[in-house]
Image 1: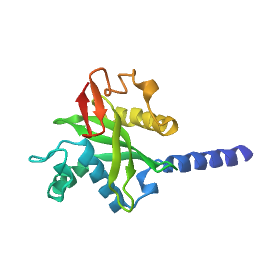
Image 2 (image 1 turned 180 degrees about the horizontal axis):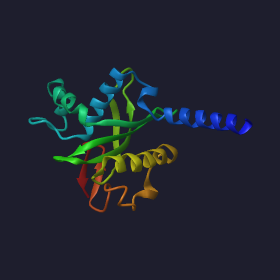
Image 3 (image 1 turned 45 degrees about the horizontal axis):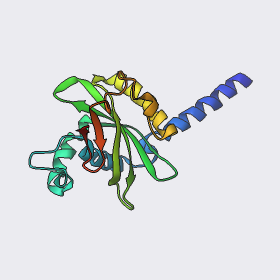
Image 4 (image 1 turned 135 degrees about the horizontal axis):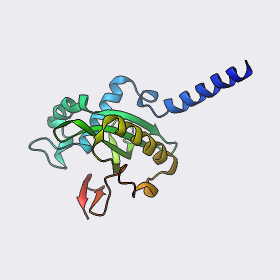
Length: 178
């Protein structure tokens, strides 16, 4: 009986800990969708006629909202210093079979759900969704714990970018050639 009670306590502890990595721990469903739409604006293709400065304007918001069902905010965590960490699963090209994981961090603009100081830390290779989910969750836990993923950058079956040719440029919020 004592072992059973210990097992229950441990499972509650771990389920509560994992809950803190869910956006629903911080936001309502509507807020979560709004935040994810804002993240998509940073990480996804630009709509026709948009550039890096204009992609955030309200005229392009319907494009990102329409894309929302293809994205999942798999993990989210707000650190005590105000840094928000995220793991999003996104579509790749025209492939219905493969997905990509995007892990990064940002600050929330005070009083809003708009990210600022946005940075993609890593992108996974194109993989089956369950593989992306499993590897991304591992990377997410490490990102939250360490604040970076530097020691995993050589694991090319987990991380495609950054690499020897692409780095993330925080000024233009996209991956660029070195």
